[in-house]
Length: 441
Image 1 (cartoon, rainbow, N blue to C red):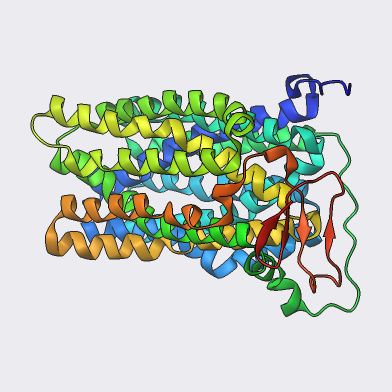
Image 2 (tube, rainbow, N blue to C red; image 1 turned 180 degrees about the vertical axis):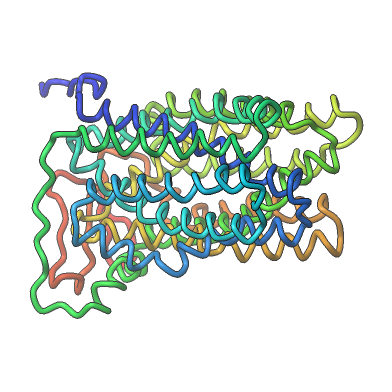
């Protein structure tokens, strides 16, 4: 019988990447909470301004997504990770600097979010494409699970830490921690020593054809189409929460910044559990049940947010109940990303990842702006109810796709649709392949 692969905790290069990503994720969680707090508490932002704040970063995916994917497929991912980390450290570091000199204004916040958004698109696309070259292919699911654990730890530590930092040092100074975390991430990636595969350019290909290759790969794959459809829908309605959640919790429900951080930390505890059990659920139930089930639980849990009411204690209980859905968030992310990496050849993986980012983050600003406009007309609570209903309905993309019939992750292969780089490719180890829009055995 084949020997079981060694744990990735014994892979020094992977551990370096994991440590850096964990530190960076904690810093990013500080910024996710602190930036809206700066807008609300320091700059007195209105709902429409909050929608703009949440949406600007997402515009980066819409505008630069295709170019980011092509860069990752044509350049080595590791240097991209280092450069984007350093760039984000510089951009975010400008916020506490401006606060010290008393010149911080909303336009600067918008510019920093836009710059960081562009660099984050490039980083995330490179990051998702780098893992399959860093670990063995049969360890990709484990690697994604452990990297999701980074996000889960950050979800626990980051928001609570943010509440403390905001109350002790003010919200702008809390951003300094995120800037330093990106420097730590850049250092750990630089310390990785495993050689990257050579990038082989495709002779005679047109730049535009290369740019849209990821979108074509999605269009010709029923699995990737369903994932992209869900990502776009979830991105749009997720923009409702990105723009209004902090404003709703602070202004409508009267939670303090520290209490809000504690509420979000409860979701982080669920994240840790979800990241740990994701590979087991995928192995036990297969991609279909795992992905669709996790989406349904997350959508139902999000309904608790607009239902929150009453005293601070009662409202906090509703928000904590909503955070229970966070158990399924890493389950979906780990399984979806692993499935995407398994069915997508390396030569177009960067562009497919970028197109997926565009589908999700590209529609987030539209949803955020729409949420801000709707909240101005109807109030924040009704707008959040629309967002929660939309997130729940986004699961229909997977329910109505061949994904629901998939029972065995280990039998999934990578398929390059005909016409992309001149041939159709798939692995001989696989049972499920895509053929003429169907999953066949």
